Length: 337
Image (tube, rainbow, N blue to C red; front, top):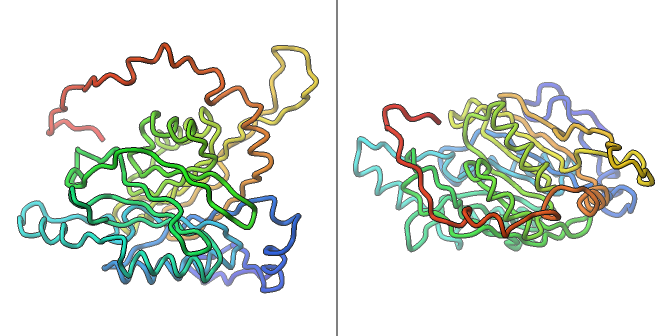
């Protein structure tokens, strides 16, 4: 294996796989027990075309790191940029900048995924009949769209309120070099609602990809760790670096496996399994490509045997969760977010 050059702003202190080792990753049985996910915490371009080019370079570098799945931040096509509310004409310009599924941007990432033999999760401002949508797409290693998702919990307290919300959460089976994995998606604010992750988990998601664009602090990290823990799902979140102005880095990979079974033959009901830290990787504020590995066999054994998730739910007592109870709107001058 070759160490990366320290002056490379994206790959410092990382490992690049040689062509021979890359071939072993593709054909070797023992080396494919783990799924490698790359978080592309990068600065976007000024246009969708530039963002595609930057994202493509990042994906190529991540592929050399052995990545199976690459994930870019929220509305990567536009760098999570909206419009100037003081200029009415800029709102219409922003709306007109939304893109259909049949466009060079989407096509470019699909072709890249096929070329590199990896999956790529990317987001864009989608043109829809109801207006622009904050949309995520997952291209598989055949260059086909495996998963489409539009953000359900649109941020109504900001300019994002001009986006039309999605109407459901979806999962899909993604074929990888390590075999199939069931994948779902949340986008930024979605992860702050426990219902989003729970629905995806109940639909069978093993891995949830989360493109993000916000200041990510310790409270939100605790939220994410809780979502993974209570639903037995792996979470991968990519945020913008501080230089982009719509995030502060801290992209994270979080495992579902919170405990190891110390002794499966134990008869003591109070015997606790061995604690494990679920935070697998956390980025700093600067640009970078972070990777973490998921042992699918270990994940599935844990999901089958751990007591959390959907196993002991009592949905007959949760009826209030489906009632349309809305809190009063906050004072716009005292808004806390």
